[in-house]
Length: 309
Image 1: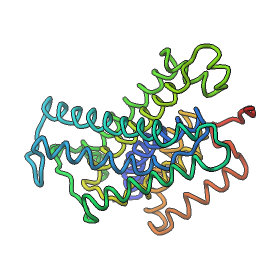
Image 2 (image 1 turned 120 degrees about the vertical axis):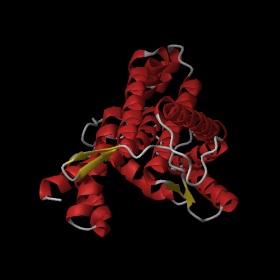
Image 3 (image 1 turned 90 degrees about the vertical axis):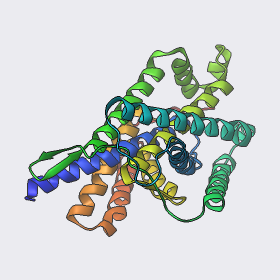
């Protein structure tokens, strides 16, 4: 490969990683935007989602070196696995909010955030004890379709990953901006008490926010499994930390910022690994994060919010 082909290949890889990080970062930023809580359980909801997607695929007969399928059957299988995974992780997020966090919503200090760390470790250890520490391989039902751009390669799995991510991001943007519940979310994010006095059911809004954020984490888990063809109990920490960094970089609480931050982190990871060394990737990512927070604490697209009483 010549230099421009290497650059193009790494941009393709980086945008693919960024699409996954963006889905995961949206869950962080939605919850923070509504109740100003950093939900560290989100890391391992993502991990659980990757296992749910694996189990659904196995239930459909995709085990080991499964037969490749084409056309509408492939689209149907992927949509079914995606929908079931999102519903399951969304329900998990709703349970976490209802039984683990709602009682702490009006508690000041770090207690709610520490609770999410505890819930995250519960999920981590439940998966570890139930499925073991071994890496679990995904079956790959996708045909080996690829497009050569010089010596750079764009594969079908990248195109599908981009398509799923863009569709979900556009759908979320439409939901938040155009629907009645989305407007209730915006009102709750600005002022919970005022929203409550205007007839908004704040508890329901927060519950749906957790459901949607966790559903997106499940989608990211499925995308991760298809992209890397494996999952493990440990993936939540690495991918989740990068997604959290993406949310902060873009401006936590800002949906377009989470998308932008995810793509930037994906590109930094891919290009940094190619042109420097993989071991320097985290140093680069978090150094950029520190610089952004020093010179623009609200992130790239964020803006200072008024203090809530």
